[in-house]
Amino acid sequence: MANTPPWVLGLTGGIGSGKSSASKFFSELGIEVVDADRVARQVVEPGSPALIAITKRHGEGILGSDGSLDRAKLRKIIFNDDKEKRWLNNLLHPQIRTEMLTQLANAQSPYVILEAPLLFENGLEKYCQRTLLIDVQLELQLTRTCERDKLTLEAAKAIVAAQMSRSNKVKKADDIISNSGTLSALKTKVQRYHYSY
Ligand code: ADP
Image (tube, rainbow, N blue to C red; front, side, top):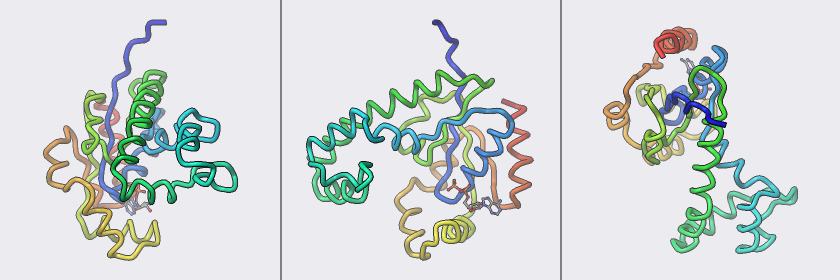
């Protein structure tokens, strides 16, 4: 079945910038969203080839009582062990990419969104025709993140520091929405871009 490849919009922004809120507004307009973080969790669901391989390598102790992957335990293993980290990345990255591209190709809406906090960090913009950055100043980003995730200011700052700087993302993005206003202002901006896409 020869499908025309879909037109893909890469949607990104740092933690707490308002990506999920923007993507919810796009999906209310009928646009399908592929969430890169969700795909990364899907490929290690119970019964998946990847989780079977991980269990073979690290033993049943890597599973929680419900049979799902104990991510914290796996993170601890790879944190100080480059060899294990490489092994895991070699296993998961191709599967994540294949699953992501399959979901994008199966989308039925006029265009499709690839939502990824690390879109630029992971070079995912190569799968996108255009990219849209949700941008917000640091103070608001930290306040919203702390409130949503019940984090301390220090913890939120550390997450932000590990992501690509705001100015580099601004340089890379084709389109930028500033999310410093209300949620309804964000919705209006999303609608405007939607019609231009
Ligand atoms: P991200 O997906 O980029 O991490 P979210 O869309 O989850 O960000 O937004 C982070 C938090 O800030 C959420 O609790 C969200 O409801 C809130 N938020 C997002 N945009 C606004 C806004 N314009 N005004 C007020 N709160 C907002």
